[in-house]
Length: 302
Image: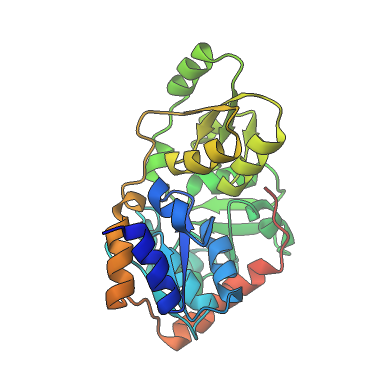
């Protein structure tokens, strides 16, 4: 069976749109209607006419799609695809932080559960986190769950950023030594780092940006070689858009296992069986939507 052809056929039959996060396997990115970061995909999904969203990503991403498009059916092909960083924070922990720091607004990275978003004042992405914090009329913020992104933000704002000790295990894994070795092998390569990387690694970067920013920077920069400090899934589009350029990842197997759990067969099964539907309690969804909506009013950088 030609799974790609069958999936495309089913998408039409089921009035569905296929979304693939930048970290998905190449085969899924090849056939997706839209590829991008988690929030960007959810926004695109809210605009399309199709009634079903098949989200190839992890659980919190499908939740965000449901939050922005509650009238549509959202399917997550791999129900076990989670996010270790998102799992490091809960609604209860956010409530505890708010009691510990009364009156201090909570800025929540979009890489978190709907429950955490619902307990937060405003969401942010890696592309607009600095602008989100600057938009708040306060001298202190609580930043959850990613301590590395929060630390990066603190460099550009006068606001005190109270960090929660969460992190992305695959970005946290990047070391200064590994980047130095790659730089010695490829002295003419520019190092592009995601702000989820540790601060000492970010310090070494020629450019720091979100996944969307990586594509933009590689395309617009004349340099021919790049060391990439984010998940290797971005390599598919980087090589496709820049066939004359070379890309090296900051360490071997820079790979999110959860993102790689989704494959073509699971996408096919999701469409055939209309599984797995992601839904939220309406009251929880409304509260989570408020924190996302506030963020959408803030300009983003790349």
